Amino acid sequence: MTRQPGPDASLLHQARKGRITDEMTRVARDEGLEPDRVRDLMAKGRLVIPANVNHQNLIPAGIGRDVTVKVNANIGNSPLGSSIQQEVEKVVACMRYGAHAVMDLSTGKDINEIRAAIIEASRLPVGTVPIYQAMEMVPRAEDLNIDLMLKVIETQAKQGVDFMTLHTGILWQHLPLAARRVTGIVSRGGAIMARWMMHHKAQNFMYEHFDRILDICARYDVTISLGDGLRPGCIADASDEAQFAELDALGELVTRCWERDVQVMVEGPGHVPFEQIAMNMQRQQQVCHDAPFYVLGPVVTDIAPGYDHITSAIGATMAAYSGASFLCYVTPKEHLGLPELEDVRQGIIAYRIAAHAADIALKKPGADRIDLEMAKARFAFDWERQFSLAMDPDRAREYFDANQGAGEHFHTRDYCTMCGPKFCAMRIYQKGDRREDG
Image (cartoon, rainbow, N blue to C red; front, side):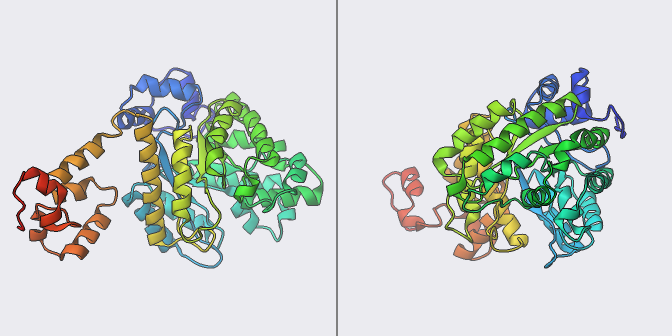
């Protein structure tokens, strides 16, 4: 049944009425759950399915601790580069390499046109950060106001945006806490709101008018992603008073979303030392009443620019194992530049590895089945099967062919490509005492 904008549009509302929608049925099938289980998890707020009523070609995905860990890929243009065509190519790459959602973080020209093209091209849920577009419409952060923000939020909701990051939890009383930090405020949305509050000496206008935002999100079933405007930007600032003061405010906003049948998840750090990650996840679950947690990384060391898809995937694995439901990828270009197609590819694969490793460790149903199939294919030297099971089949085949030489006959070799026929352990084991050179 096709949903329409209106007061009863949200899937959370439907779940609380005891109804099972097409979106819930699809998620149940993909996750190996019963539809009524998905409905009940949604009704409790433990599971969200970002699915704007106006996103027509969407394949819904469930986000929560009771289902497999999901991966988001950030795309979008900047004032320094990219085009509609390039951003659509990134969407195609996100779908090809297995992302579960994309966020359009565009801050340059033609933002509405780029977003429309992204939504039309994407079968994945699409997210945005509305304050970025609002900022493009005024000379300075100080010139923002709630009416402009509501206009932007509604425009994006009408287009079909499935989830929005809203920096509603960074409050006036938090700003002195951030002043003690090494890197201050590193969230763009957080910095913009902080600048507005400092100039006007007033409370965050999105916090003050949160009910008006909820009106729009309920009408189109936009899932709110409560932004972490005070996430730590270096490991020295991790787990400080500012971060946790904002988290407390986000916990309050979660309950306000639920009161209005608006789906909600919570965003988290950032840069966090490895040993603090589990504590951060557990604290969020407690403060935010088990609402799904959406984390950036966390990045576990500050000294690896160019490799932050690795430093953050290390943190993301621990975060997912400790309770995070949704991982926002980091690319090799983090801290350095706008990601291009190859950076998007590397970021997605790094985070799919992190998510899958956590699913295995958490013993999610069927999570390790494909690993067993890969092990069998390796022992049988079934190269084509190995390629088909790989997270990135193209890269696996590319490396194999570059090492062995292209051609189908190389794919029939019955020995390890690194060791050769004489020293391949599996071949030696399979052939007993016969140590043939091939």
